[in-house]
Length: 194
Image 1 (cartoon, helix red, strand yellow):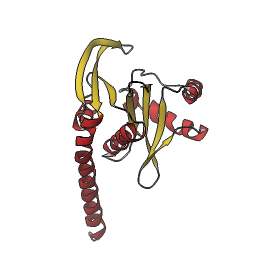
Image 2: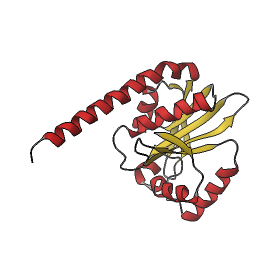
Image 3: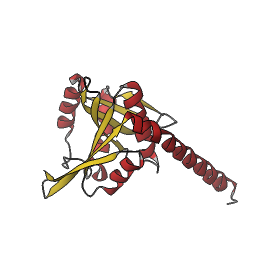
Image 4: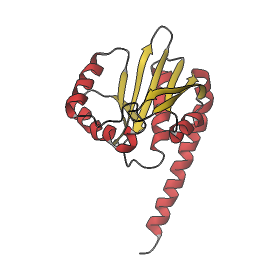
């Protein structure tokens, strides 16, 4: 598994249907279907913005399976906001794998001291995943965001480098356990007579 900077037109075109999938749009600030023109304009701006970095995540076989991004990167204070989404239809556990790789990259490669995240109130899956990885809720901005239909709260979370050092091994062992269960499941499936 690896993160690679999002930089080619092919990668740009690959992720547009993922971002426009209903399950991904629901978790984002902007819920509308993004046009190819809007997506291309975003991609061009992103390529020249030093305060953000976008990555394509690949699974163990090299298949693209998600997007990771860091925004509002503050090199003086060593902080950034982050987000990610898995490819629609990606196997169970993909989000945890992406999160693991992304946080290792944030603290080991980017040298961040703190990673901030925001989750729309009501997105219990993302909130649970963040907490599982050591993020602490730092506040709720009540009715902060208007999603086009209603006002929604935003839950702010934060993770410090030393907190990730503790949770890194917990998440790594969960991934290893998940891999063991998958291998056992495949073994049983292949050994069962048809």
